[in-house]
Length: 378
Ligand SMILES: [Zn+2]
Image (tube, rainbow, N blue to C red; front, side):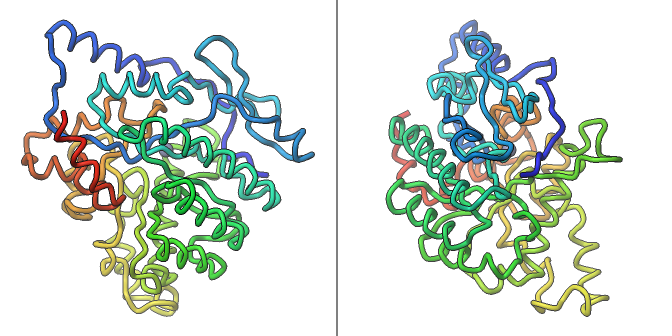
C-alpha cells in the first residue's frame, strides 16, 4: 500500500477549533446569537471514528492508519510507526463538531472519510471490510443528528464489483448521499473502463460523487515545502477532471453528478490551454469523445475552497455561480478555518448568489430539499 505523504506533525498556528472559540467569544461579547442569515452547508469535511480495530493484526499485512490517542482530545494518525498527522477531537467527536459549527454558523456538514483511509492498494476484500466499517460509522453519526450531518461513503474502487455492492448498501441501507473517491485508483485514472459499472450504479442510485485529490507524488523534488499538498493536489484534481472529460465518462453517463475538491484544483485556470490542446491535437486528446472540456463546464461541480477572493470571483465566472458549493476541508488547517466567511463577506456578491454558494447549490446537488424546512425553524 502506498503512503501518500511524508509523516507530518500538526503545524503551529490557528486551527478550526481555535477560530471557532474566538468567533464564539466575539459573539458572546456582542450578544449575537447568529451572525449570518444564510443557511450554510459545508460540502467538504472529514471525519474518522474515535477507534477502529488493529488493521494490520486483522488483515495480516500492510501499512494501515491507526489512531494513537496521546492525550485527551488529541491523537496521532500512525502509519508504520510514523506520525502521518496529529488530529484533535473535532475529527471524531460529533459534539465538538456541532459546537464549532454553531460558533461559525455552519448548519450542515457533509461528512467523508480522510483520503488516506481509501486504501485502494490493499486486497479488495480488506478495503471493502474497512469501507463498511467507516461507512457504518458515518451513517451512525448522521442518524444521531440528521439535521446537521449528511454522509458520503468510501468504496473499494479497485474492485468495481465490490464497489458497486457497497455503493448500493450506502444508498439503500445507510441512506448516504453518495461517495467520496480518490482522484485516481492505483494506476487507473478515472477514465479507466473498469470503473464504468460504478458510474452506472451512481446514476442508477442517484448517488453523488465527490472527487478528492490523494496519493500525490511526494518524492524527490516534491519532498519539501508541503509541495504534495500545495502543488500536487491541484494537479491531481486537474488530472481527474480531464480524465473524466477526455475519457468520455461525462458523455457516457449524462446523469452522473460529480464534484471536485479545492475549487477544481488548477483545472479552471488551465481549461483554456486544455481546450486548445484538445483542438490542435485531436489525435492525442479527442480519442474517446469529440467534446472538449469547455463543453462540460456546466457538468463539473467544485467546492469553494480557493483561499483568495479574486480567485473565487474567477471561479464563479469560469465554472458558473450554480456549480460552486461551500467546502472548507474541516477540520484540517489547510481548509477555510471559518467556513463560508469569504463568501459571506464578499461585497461583490448579491444575497441571491451567496445563498446559492453557501447552500442552494449543495441542496440541489445532494438532493437535500427537505433541509429547507429546517432553515425555516431557525
Ligand atoms: Zn479534504
